[in-house]
Amino acid sequence: MTLEPYLLYALAGVGLFAIGLYALIARTHLLRKILALNVMGTGVFLFLVAIAYRSEPVADPVPQAMVLTGIVVSVCATGLALALAHRVQTTTGRMVLPENDESGA
Amino acid sequence: MNAPDGITDDTRLTPLRLIIMLFVLTLAGALGWAVCSLPEYSSGLAVTALAELSNSGVLNPVTAAVLNYRGYDTLLEIAVLLLAVIGVWSLAQAEPPAAFEPASPVLLSFMRIVLPLMILIAGYLLWIGSFAPGGAFQGGAVLAGVLVLLRLSNQDFAIWSHEVWLRFCLVLGLSVFIAVAVGVMAGGGKLLEYPRAHAGMLILLIESAALISIALTLAALFVGGRALSDEDSSSASENGVQPK
Amino acid sequence: MNSLQTVFDLVLVLALLWLAWHALAAADLFKGIVLFIAFGLLMALAWMRLRAPDIALAEAAVGSGITGALLLSGLARLRRLERSAQPHIGREP
Image (cartoon, rainbow over all chains, first blue to last red; front, side):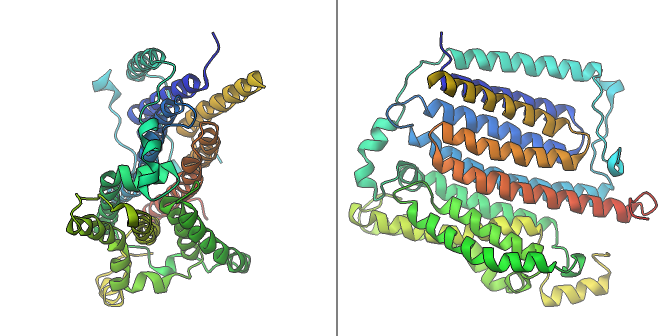
């Protein structure tokens, strides 16, 4: 079985989503959580475009258009999240969420 | 330079983290299995999209999808951009210009060469979007890059101090989009159903307005807060806000 | 030719996953953000490979350019606040 490019990139999208999701839950620093959200979003975009790649002779333009708008929206979400994190820091004095392993594990 | 100013994040593999990792791996496995079971070939909406391309007013199928087939989507997206700026503006105030160091002469002379080119490229991307890769988003991002460079070199006070113009330009994209969307209903069409003869012109009009709004939105997010107007800054210094 | 493309795809995908993991696991936030910008630029390459030049343009300009600038300025603001909150721990003498 030859590895189709769309399959490789779609699986990579799943991988990115998983990496981002793990970091989003496990890391406590807010800036790192924002990075993780971006990686998760990129994974979803990669999956969508890989799915669009399957059609011949040209790739499906509709998912591509969705990803195009999605990229711009994710930048805006990042900007808003950074402003919120800044507000958290000015209010509480720190940007790292408290970690309570004892109660969780 | 170890443990950079207290921003360390605990990365030890605690039992809780192990559980999270197992959960994420299970999810990834399930998703991967779902991906593998997809059919190897599917045209999706490509056939329909290409068949309607001659009616859309543009020759680039992605631009047609963004601004014609899925125009409703993009309209809401521009609204989301505006909401993000409103959110940021209500959360924070921009740093006063004194917070930045004066720009280095190298940066200033670099900008003198690059900025006109970037503005040209932004316009070119907007124009070429109708028949080749490009469009309002890409052009808007390049134009936002111009504003970011101006910000970094402390040259942008004029942009952020004219609050009325700033707000006008921020809502320009959304208002032109809504005006066109509703305006076509007067000619007997549905919402966002451009008449075939004028579709190309209307799309270019929307994109030009959206380009300005997108660029200013992204730059406003970079500035990270509402710029202080003259009255604000005097009252802020009285109240002792923004200590350096 | 075809196997060469497969090798390229594999290297690109592995590089993307490696960069994403290290961007999120780096102890230094600055390093993480720089890795994330590199990740965005490689994503632009992946979009070209997937016949999506429109998205490649947007990713190169927005995804790595503007997002990178946003994150770096956010980090600078964070460190400035930390320094003003605890002047005795700040890196500057």
